[in-house]
Length: 285
Image (cartoon, rainbow, N blue to C red):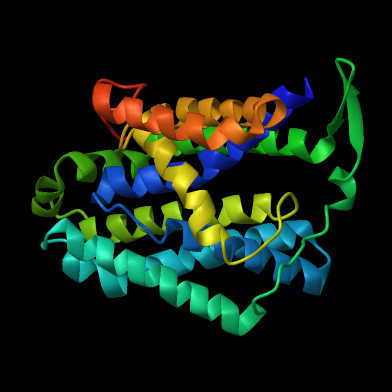
């Protein structure tokens, strides 16, 4: 049971991170290499705010909102002029943001590892099916499911979600109709960045906070997005849980093979089903 809980919690963390990347790609067509750096920034902000205030909730809110605002600034000031240019301009730009954000983190928080204390209410363990399960792992699973439900509601039931779907399928028509396409783009990029910051804040009590987060986690994130299908949020949910379970089972029974199995799944998917394992056609939501 403990392996299953670990796998599900890893899957939910991957979903929080990968859903933002998929949302940005589905709407804007931008593969944001800096998504991992935004995740790292969220973890550092959550650590800093919790250290100053003693409040886990305050760290969560500030990290999510702060990284979301950084994402809006990135889109408006840097990415917006490049939409009409070939995609490699965007790739180079977002890669440059990795370096900028990493240098800013070095200046503010230094090079050492940081650790966020576990919230007092979530620091214990419970007995479940004969296994001792950390309460925080259960919190991550439940929280991830709630965010998943909220994201689907926003994209499928709200007016904003309708505008997002319309702009992602025919941005030119949205502009002709006089709808604020530029503001929709900024809001979507900000939402995707906020999800990355939220993932960083949620993961902070579980893993050491360090500069390598910007690159280590983004690899799994891109694997999830490719397996789920570019732009397909539903596919990302399934792919996140799949990768989370593969890693949890692998670390338990054959730790030296975990990365090999993960990359083998990626290569097999690209060769045999490049549209993703969980969709015939990549689509937003």
